[in-house]
Amino acid sequence: MIQPDARSRLTPQDIALVFQCTGAEPFADGPDVMLPAEDMDAALDRPELVDGLRATPPPGPSLSLFFYVMVRHALVARGITDRRMADYCAALLREFGRGDRAHRVAAVDDHRHQYLVDIVADATTATAERRFMVQVHLGNYALWLAGIFPERIEARRSRKGGPDLAYYDALGGRGFALASDHWLADRVGIADVLRTAAGRFTALRGALNAVSSDLRRLAA
Image 1 (cartoon, rainbow, N blue to C red):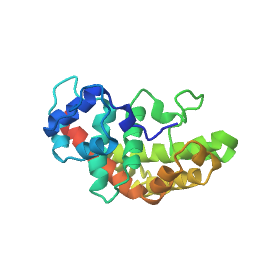
Image 2 (spheres, one colour; image 1 turned 45 degrees about the vertical axis):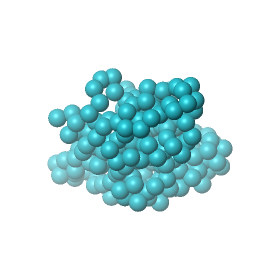
Image 3 (tube, rainbow, N blue to C red; image 1 turned 135 degrees about the horizontal axis):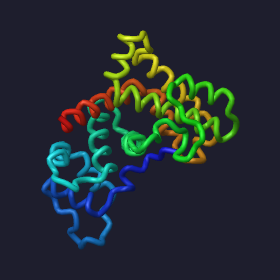
Image 4 (cartoon, rainbow, N blue to C red; image 1 turned 45 degrees about the horizontal axis):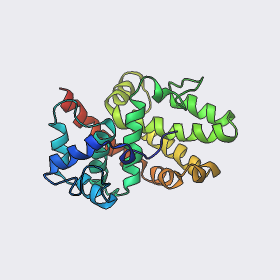
């Protein structure tokens, strides 16, 4: 289950890198002293951090730090200021970029989904905890595909008459909405994130479109 945990995964090296890029002092009271969360959040919101992390030589930031900063700034630009939403989207990019994790409801799962309709069918027949997990995965997978690979979706639509981005927005929002109403959403502590994702899916997807464009430019 994807959790909004990007900031909690930052390493001491990440923290030092953040303050190196912003020109501030991270460890005024020694390297073992935990920074107040609000100070770290303020540093992560500094606009110069985006370009600073992009220019950092290897090994550079962790994926949690890099994706959080990229996503956070893209979300704020679209009026989504909830840091937990940035945590969640960053964790989604981190986890779904590994192997075939994006195609599975959980890291260890016997079912491998290629299309959204497969996930919808799975959710229809699933019961109890698995239904919740499949509903969340429907939102996650739609956001991953439409957010990071919009050109692929458009090319498939043009060549083969495949669904457009609005289709992904609709199914992704539906998945998150159904999951947010499940009793397990509160138990695992992500009901608020799921509700925001359901209500602002198109804006979230647009933010990830911007992140995807930045990543392609960096790779060029």
